[in-house]
Image 1 (cartoon, helix red, strand yellow):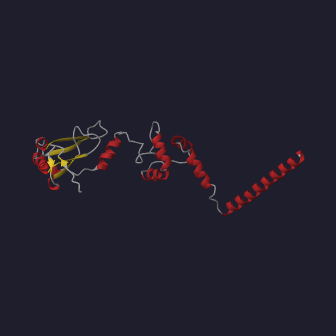
Image 2 (cartoon, one colour; image 1 turned 135 degrees about the vertical axis):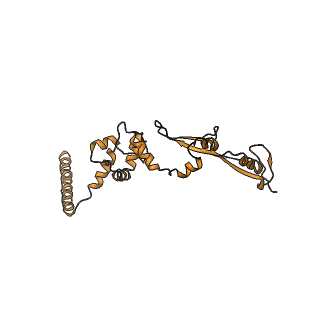
Image 3 (cartoon, rainbow, N blue to C red; image 1 turned 60 degrees about the vertical axis):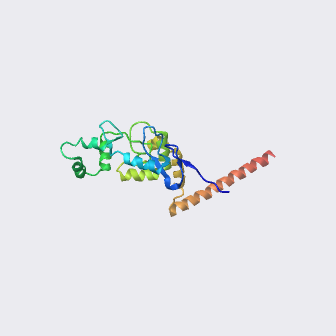
Length: 220
């Protein structure tokens, strides 16, 4: 025995008899919307009615002097068009220059915009104030990558041999690990010397063992 799925419009509650009458609607922005986009189902005719009633809008980002982030606003296109009094909005937009994000970024940085150092994009950059646990963790986990970025930007890199850097970013354990690796990077002469030291160390250990044996024998 087969099963049939029955759908109803989320807008009106009307029965959707077949797939040809089903429209999927994704809501990206709304004053009552929560964390992110949602989707609803409706009759095709209901969706078409939305399209007919749709407003011509302009979506703008406003960069005001004291704002760290731009303000996103939406207004009717006709209302926006009326603000252009020297020439038409069509002429103004045609002649306007494309957005240059890098220019905006450098300009805002020069005005002292606070950077988020708890991100891989800015972690490790020289700055005043406390180093957060998140920035420390990023530096520990991605030290080589961060140093490459810092060097490419002409900034000082983070050194495991600099006590201030080690303390500032909590790199003591990493410094120990890197130093252990470096102890095995000998040249030929160093290898011979290291081998000699190893032989002497073994001899000393053997001497200590024999000495202990002698003590044990005396005690017995």
